[in-house]
Length: 120
Image: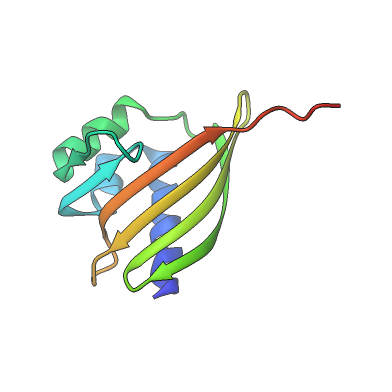
């Protein structure tokens, strides 16, 4: 199932770059929930997820993203990532993703923390 995660994250990055509603919808089940922070009200379902995503979208090419799997419990994956904005901050990310059997996310929660600049 780790291959399913790699495929999902590749599709997530494609949607991140395109901001195309069809690419975004393809990532999530119809009744999925997406939390931009662990205690935030979720975006529920395709309509809210697409609207929320597009309200917070990045410009294509604005950031690079590196990730690694840090754990898995059945269909739930724990991912550590780094988002490096070309003209801005660098963020540490933690994602919790529950994948449905068809490879789409049923639940997605992200934590993001701005990294402190290197002190020279």
